[in-house]
Structures are given as structure tokens and as C-alpha cells.
Image (cartoon, rainbow, N blue to C red; front, side, top):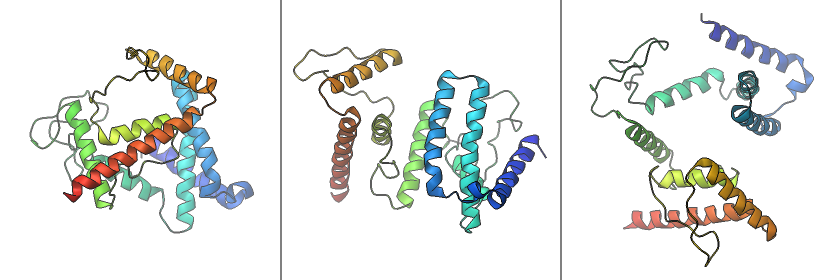
Length: 248
């Protein structure tokens, strides 16, 4: 058995023992763990952006603890276990990656079975499979839309957490309804003011966003609330348009 599997099994065993023998760990619930899940996620983001490999490894471990703990809590109630989580995730990744996998989960012809082997382009034996980044992204979106449709979702924004930070909520909402290369009209920084030159780099974008926040602060506005309200209006407008188009 690979060492990675051995270590993961040992982690699962340790968490089960802690749930049985540690009063603090035994008192945890899905709800009480939410604050830690959010904190650990942000700490991992910070480690990736500014930390060392050791810090990233440590924060990944903290996040993995959350996954294993939540799965253990569910197992104790008979809902599901960590194997069910892994099984569903594996099936989803196979389903959304026809450029790598056949529907039965086997690798497409021409791809190396050894993960350590050099990457080679997939043989073009499956005309339905995407073969470049644009097609891969389009296929991923298409499969996700099909999944949402089968789940009974009527809105393109179904499944986007309303509690996301406003910037993440805005970007996720745009991702759902616009292709990645869509060009939006330039916007003026102030109504009636001169057109602002669009940012050319991510750093310039950051400066522009920070300038907007400074403007909000100087006027006593809540930038987070303002953007969240604008995104909510955007979602409502798109949903109305989608419903009207479906009724025709």
C-alpha cells in the first residue's frame, strides 16, 4: 500500500479515536466547526500567497483535518463516510474531464498511466473530447450546467453561497453567465468623470480596487455591502431574463 494511503488511513483512525476519547473533540458538531473551516481556509490562502512550502503543508493539514472531522461526524450518524466523499469526488472529476478519462474512468488512449511519467498530448481518438484549454473550460462548464439542471436548479446562480465575500461572489456570478473571454464595457470611476484606463496587470487592478474602497470609506459607505447589493441586482436581472427567454 502506498505511504500516502497508509498515512491517510492512520489519520482517519486517530480522528475516530479522538472522537471517542477526547471530551473536547467529542463535543464538536458540523455547526461548531464552521468557524474553524473558514479560518483554516483563509490561513491556507495566506500561506500560498506569502508563505513557505512548510507553511503551505501545515495549513493543508489543518484543512484536511476539517474534511476528515466532518466526514467522521457524518459517519457517526450513518449519513456517509470519508469513502463516500472520495468516491463522489472521484466520479465528479472523471465526469468533468472527458479529455483525460473515458466514461468508465479509464485513461484515454495515449495518456501515461504512470502519474510520474512525462505529459503527452492525448490521442485524438475521441472527437467529443476537448483538446485545448478553451474547449476544456467549455466542457467543464457544460457538465456543471447539466449537473445543476439534473438537480432541479432553475437559476444559473444555484449553488453559489450567498455568504461569499462580495468580490468572490461577483466573480463567481459573472463566471456562471459569461464566457472567460467576454469583454465588458469600460466603466468610469466616478459618474460624469473621465473614463479610467482599464488596468493592464493584476497589480494595477489591486490598486484600482483599493482606490474604490478608499472612496467608499471617505464617503462613509460600506464597500462590501455596496458590491454585494450590486451583485444581487445583477443576479436578479439575469434570472428574470432567463425566465423570460424560457417562457417564449
